[in-house]
Length: 231
Image (spheres, rainbow, N blue to C red):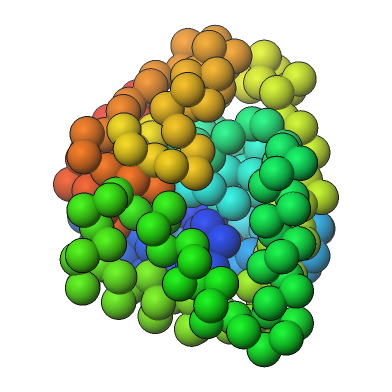
C-alpha cells in the first residue's frame, strides 16, 4: 500500500531535486511535490501546502523544505504521520547569513540572478561535486526553472522564518534527520541538534556528501527514506 508522501524542495530547487526518489520509492509512496514559490512567508507556504494535501501524509523537506515542514507540523501536527528533515536546521539565520541574503537579493534586483547561483554552487554540493558537470548542470537547470522572481520570494520567506528549536520536543511522529557529512550550509552539528531535540528520531550522516544529498548520494538517501517509510 502506498503512503502519501509530500516532498518540499529547497531554495531554488524543483521536483528534479527528488527525481531519484520519485522513481525508486514509487512502489511504497504516492508522492506530491509542494509548490513553495507562490508566497513570501513560510507560514503562507505551509498553509497552502496543507490545503492541497491529503488528510494524513508523510512529510519530507530538504533545506528550505525543512523550514516549511517544521511550519506544517506546527500548524497541523495531527496530519503528519512521519517527518524527514534533510540537510536543514531548526535555527533561524544568523546575522552573517542574513547579510549575505540581503546582498543576494540586491544582486537579483539588479538583474544579476545568475551571479547569485554561481556564488552558491560551491556550498550547495560536496567540494568534489563542483567538478561534476552533470550535477552542476542539474543545479543550474533547477535555478533557471525557478527564475529570479520566485527565488527572491523564497529567500524572503526563509529570512522571516520562525526559530523551530523551541518546538522540537513537541514532534512525536517517527522522524528521520539526514545530513551530508560535508554539508557546508547546514552541517552535521545542526542535524545533531535536531536529532537531540526530537525524541526517538533517527540520525543518518551520509559520507562524501554535501548539501543537496538527494541528488548527490541518491542511493543512500533513498535507502534511508525507505526505512523511514516502513518504520
